[in-house]
Image (cartoon, rainbow, N blue to C red; front, side, top):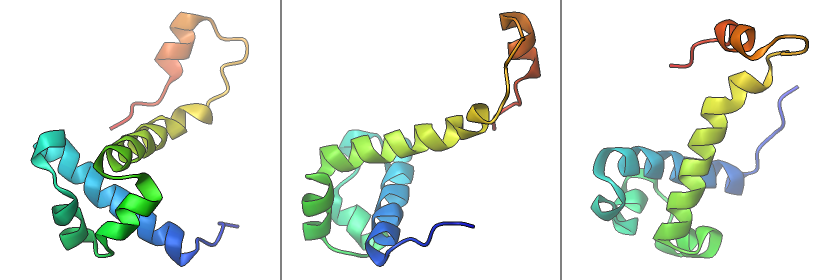
Length: 94
């Protein structure tokens, strides 16, 4: 059963998701806290209190993207496989 997220967790997740998309498209310098808030909702004070500011939001957003991208690899059982077979049996990640 999936865990129930609190409103704060859902809000922070939305901020991270919107910020990650903006950072990927515009780079760090191309993103402002104001723009993230404009698209995700919430407030600047939330970004500063939860993430410490733009830099913390950037780090948190990119870490979350990396975890999500690598998550399918954590479900693979590599027991008994050598490196070559492990790589050939890994699912492709889009």
